[in-house]
Length: 169
Image (cartoon, rainbow, N blue to C red):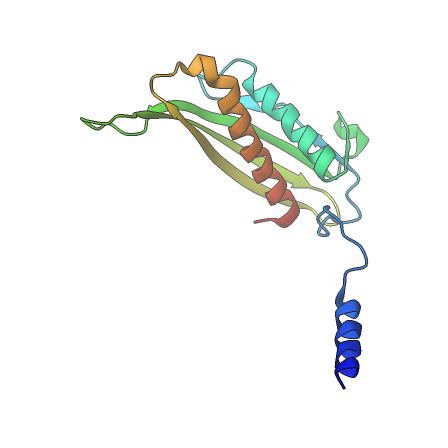
């Protein structure tokens, strides 16, 4: 009797096992082949000069590598997705002001906004506002650790864009 139960369990378990695994989101419409990302406008007065173009390139890389779409550079190439946007703020603020604080932290906060225009399978416009931050010790010079902080924040902003694009959250 145990053998029969074991055989039934093995059959049911095997019939539920996935036949393939993929890290690509299944919600990508088959009509999506090409995309375009315009250089982001830099509206943040104290952001590094090249920051908006650096973030634009990271978004392009993220979509190419994680979604598998082809990057085009012009509207005449008929992109199904077109992303525009801006870096709206870039601020360093004290996180806590306490009298006897042994560790005072600062926070670098970056806010960016995006418009995602989709032409296929049906026209749609999605808006995204992403505000991300990284904390660091107040004793550190922000210029010395800026690249590390930007790396952390940029990864989060790119992930926000991908989540909006793929799942419309």
